[in-house]
Length: 448
Image 1: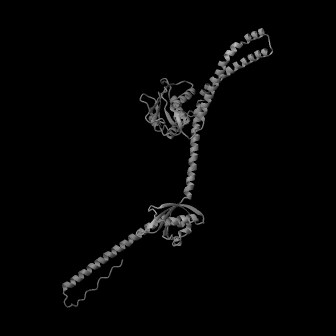
Image 2: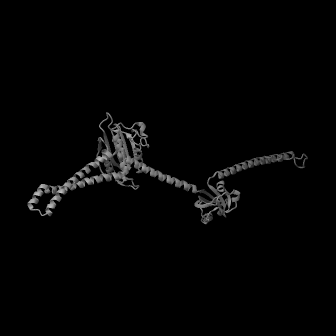
Image 3: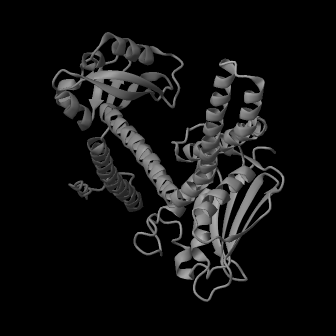
């Protein structure tokens, strides 16, 4: 910065009527003006430096923006554009400056929408969102989610428009990929849930076979008896059709025990129907448990779910376990009966596996359901050794198991936790004060 030259020395020739004190005052005033001039020039230099730094900051911000930015005047002519827009359309800022925004738009609909936004007199200060199609450097349309904001001058009037836009083609592609991945994850989760259900069902095969064997054996025995009765009736009917004498028919009736046969037929038929119905009920229950569960939720009676789960898990045990369960009043929740039964079977199976070790007390499992307020609370407690403290925080982790290889997948409790969470409930585990583990399931009631 160049300094102002010092004022020339005052003339030493004395002037008439002017004394030395007057000249001293003049010199002092000139020094003050000179000092003020120096201070003003320093302040101006500082302001220029700050202005340059502000301009550099604004340029760096505009250059680093990934969104496109266009500043137009009130006629729609471009006054400024950032590097992202220049890169997208393949033109420099000098080439864009002074051209019309309409030249960058790919179709008439975009031109009309942009013009309507710039001509709007009541445009919101926060801007309005508009979908436009820009022409890229290859002349191809690029969808852009743009925000149109009015630019206000010092007099408070609108002097132009600021456009900030983000190309949505990549966002849409990422969204579709994310949606496809989400659908694939849902299918995988459903398959995993179904696989775990099949694994649980496989553990019950022996009990199911025994359960089916009783009614089927009963039906088979009745059918054999009915076949013999049918043969005897055919013999007697043949004698009737041959018009045998009455003494012969009477003797044949006694020999074939027709009266006993006729009296026994209703009970045989009733027993056969009962056995067939029992078999159908068992098969229906297995189909309902093994089928893929629908998405919709229906009212479910937790008491019935618990009773079915106890029945099936008990049937799959070689040695029975004492289950302390007493059904109370119906307790209804909204959900999937098959999924909730799977949760109960997993909890019961874990409880059954935990009891009855060497030197342990007689195996016993307590099951209870309590409806309090808006919640239904189901507790499953056993008299086993309990859960080690270091395992409590990992008990619901996928693939975590303390069972030997081939005895468990480590998915039962994890899937059960997810099912309860999807039903708007909570599944927790702890150790009972008197020993053993306690699993508690809380679900929102549907009958409140």
